[in-house]
Length: 468
Ligand code: GDG
Image 1 (spheres, protein in one colour):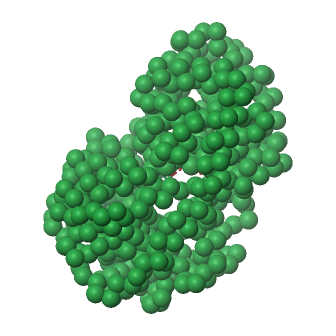
Image 2 (tube, protein in one colour):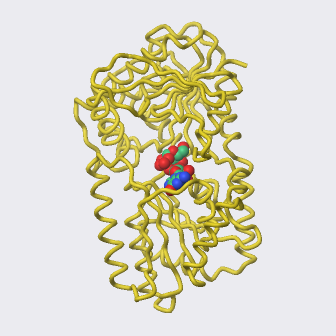
Image 3 (cartoon, rainbow, N blue to C red):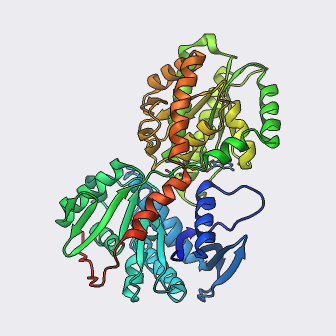
């Protein structure tokens, strides 16, 4: 088996707390099996970049990390990645900021990652680069002479062409994807948008999975990410989960709980969720005192202004709704800005009659799948899911809604609260089958299977980089 080199912005070192996400566990397993290395940013800031690589090995997983300078973090991470690409790729050009410094910092840091990775790569290694922080990295490694099999996976949506062209130098950025052999997306929809861009903006052509620009052909595929379904279902009946379930149940006093779990991010549709829930309270006074929305939202990217704004908006909105509807012994929203260990989180999911997952745009959304996996098969809850989440392509037995419509959200909540047990079980079984079949190992295999099978290209040609 070829050695796998994973390169991503952050590296997750295995730990004993059991708090790692499914992606980290799946990649760690692949790295362990192939005796590979995971390369990325340590999360630490240094006064002057030295290129010093910190090597570690935890539980059989080797990691190699570098520290970045403050300016790198500002321009590359907070800047181009999270102020430019993240909003644009989530269809929010109103929030996207374009600054030459961001783009310069992004390229500089990617060069730093390429310099770090280059000496660690052996000719037979297979390289797997992750996400929007690292789009040009493959090209930079090719420029350093690496002819390895190289794949890239995008964890977020690919935007429609008419939005992407608002990015200065867009085709220069996209052309770097042609340095990889396989490029992966979560859904057919994101893949379609990518192909559309290539045909319209780059004069490329598509033939099945093969996409050609000039004399360079790559494979572009859809591989929807999954979760470790079995592990999550087990976590939901673990002792910490049961304790949490009991704690929640006691506090609810027979009320039905609706749960939302999201990083505090404008793409997750939290404001629209609160508004839809408020609409439900307005439409159905008979449900007052009978339901509680528990929204868990650990803050993220707090250095970016749009994240500070969404936090302030949600604080105010939750306060307003609670102020309007609360009684001395009931508040309709429990808005929690802290995170929980995964097993406790699984217990919270299991306690909830409804999982309310309403992103405005989401590459996949793993919370929807975790909610399904954590349910009690005898008495499962109902998933209400935004049709704009990648997960909606697979979880068709959720109640699919348009998150921009408070009325639809209100109707779906009512329907879920009154859904007969038999229908809940039928919908849950169908969703659980999907979550179990297309789990995290299936996803890894879906992508690396393609990548490993690629014929090594001996006549590699530079992709053309017309400026957009
Ligand atoms: C990106 C894409 C794509 C959240 N709160 C707590 C906690 N979480 C965990 C959840 C879940 C993860 O964070 C969030 O995953 P999502 O998929 O929902 O969203 P992003 O973070 O935006 O991820 C997304 C994903 O990449 C994978 O490709 O699906 O579309 O945007 O696992 O459980 N975990 C714990 N405590 C919390 O309070 N332990």
